[in-house]
Image (cartoon, rainbow, N blue to C red; front, side, top):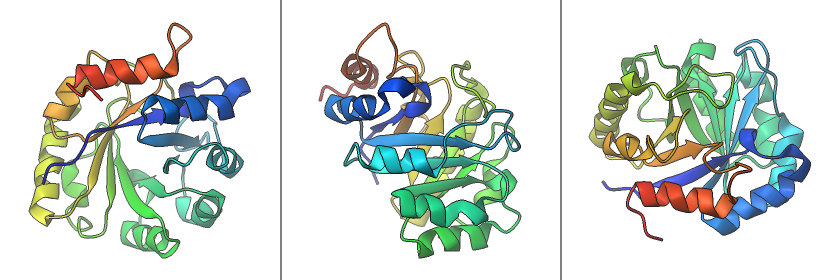
Length: 224
């Protein structure tokens, strides 16, 4: 099953003083999703956006909000993010001792349910929940900070996950997060990824948001 490759514009790299405007620019520039990284200073060493930012983004775009929870005990906050307008909520397998329950809870809130894997985490940990997941995020950097260099050693895992997805017969999105740019985008797509999460390759003072998205699409042969 072939899926369209989408660009998920990660607002972690956006100008926070112009957040609403930048989200609109991403939509107008051809992004397929708005990606929102939520960090709690515990699961990862940084502290970022919460449900209020999701609500603000929701009021600035009609694109689906792809909320990535890099937090411990995510179950306690799932309803807050769903109520704020998240279309997709992804929690880390490393933070979910009862992953099946977490996925059920996300789905019960009316959101697509996702699981993220850190670079060292094997694909096999998802074998028992593939029938439930709608989104899988492969971290291609160690989570917690933007602007890190891409780790190519995760590509065999993305290929394995693409095969696992194919075996289900379901249209599960396979996303990659970290160091995605015009140099790395093509190898990610070749390894089975169909959602490229991009921060500084989209939101960058050196070029417009539209130009960043266009360059990424050009790198994967998308002329739209």
